[in-house]
Length: 428
Image (cartoon, rainbow, N blue to C red; front, side, top):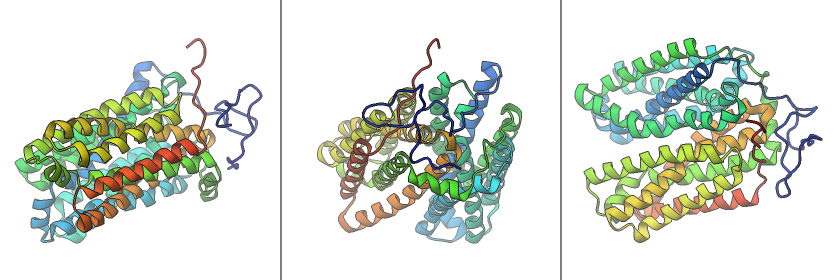
């Protein structure tokens, strides 16, 4: 794989004054992005929808223990803290597996690989539902992390291969909407199923959904041969691209800052706004709905203006998180800040993915793998550091940490090297 740190502009492209970014048109040294398969538009969007269903399912599977910790802990005879490790394990394994799956897969057809990974996710959740003791649950959650990292590393950059270029932004937003929709619908639905039929039934249903998605992928996705073999040296070589390193740094800061604060939002709202359990649930629902809206809003702006999109996102996250301890003393004020926070964070995934894809158009799969690895690693680190701060200084203090990291992301976004936005082809 070529060195992407010093690309040569195409004679037909016009470099921007502030970034000097590589062109998005093919050059003599880069591989032109493959066009979307020639299928009917309905078939193309059905393929995008089934990939979105996969992201929804893997995020739901990852977060499912959140609403089931107490009964899980009792049944498996461990503390709630130990049961909470099922999330940490999944995140860490996903962070490690995301860069490795494309390397191991080589030239294996990506449609078949996605189907296989969803089948692994189904098996993992069914094993979770059966787990007679905690050690079996840990093994099952390792499998969930493996499947999650693999699915995300492939799905994150898949839109460009499924729809025409003019629709890539919308398709990417739809694929990433699985994150927000899982938070709003998937996790609460799992909790509700667990209340009705026991926590094991929630895992069993999630396993069945994963299996259905695997079948739907086999039917609806076109053949997706590997664009080129991904090598360890090629993945590592992306770190020589300053746009990639800038993008990964701002992802690490934003995601770590978000999860440092958001993981402990319930005690913060109880302490700052005096919210009870019902009000907290309502506030988080408002946050989730705003996140869905923010995801699609960022999908429309990021392709043309990746730096501006992530700068606004970082600034809004920083402002809303920092203001919660200051003016979030009522449920109404907290609700307003959470809506801003949710809308801004909803744009992080699609905005950052667009940044990285535009920074290395000849190595999209490798860039996606790094993105997913950094993203999941930052979740684990942010939650861990946030917990230490909460224990040491109380719940509101974690908002200052989250806000400071978001400010750092804003600085990196404005000062670092950014990719050029995609121009809309004329006549489209």
